[in-house]
Image (spheres, rainbow, N blue to C red):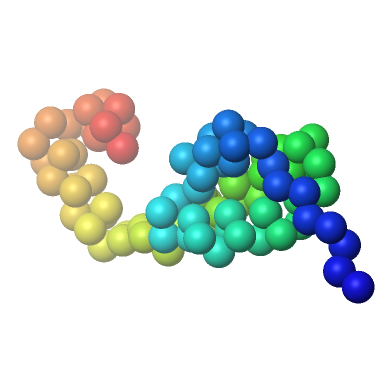
Length: 87
């Protein structure tokens, strides 16, 4: 038999949903909701999972050639210190 599912508080679920990037929101939120046993456990699991999901989405959307081109243009136009500051 399946264990009874306990839903997290609505305010906590809303906060977690806002922190998850839209591209991964449905799958990550669904997995967190399915494993929810208590509000404390849900929050702890979200604190462990959400930063890794954010980093994963950042890595997937990173475009190194475009970033290098922007850095070169800033360096040419504004100089070295501005490049370090802006990138």
